Image (cartoon, rainbow, N blue to C red; front, side, top):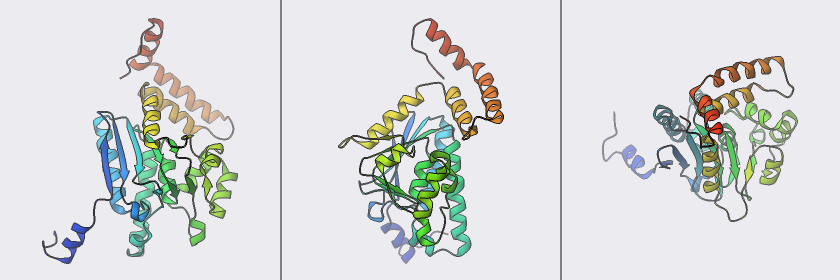
Length: 273
């Protein structure tokens, strides 16, 4: 049941602006922007539900590029909204964590290619959101951190899995057991971000450009490469090679593979579908 128009609940609802904004970029791309700069763009349940719905819609339409960013220059996302979480019963808190974890894992595996345009600090759940994306582009003033250890808790949005996969166990333990903030250039050197923009450059513009550079190619080949990389470990294994063999055979039979080879031989741009 909806609250009565003049009830306190309705008044609070009217005073609470949306926590996100969708910014379409043509037919194939969407910018999802968290719009809570006064709260350092902390993640609320509303943000999680909106991002899930956005991904649903993009997958249904066959759109290929999602760019995640936030309002302002101070914070990309400071993590989960602890004020919201503390108002929840214990079971509801765990449900929010489980919902966020499932969503970010889904984002990391989605056929929609994603880029985090990190415009400010990315702490806790904010860094986990960025790590779930296919690529990460950071402004030079950015710092990233998983500081949960300082609160006596753990990263709960799959960060204990994303971080070692990106930077290795030694660096991941360094970050998670100290909770220290890592500057953008160090994050770049360890492979935690893909690119750091030049001073004064617009991080969103560069993130969109990187995403468009990738999605111009065959979606079959992109999905295949991502599957093979996900199966790779610190060493070359027979299991990983078996995945590569299977994926290479499957992608090689696609119309897009035939088109790519034909276009090369005919010296024309390929038209992938």
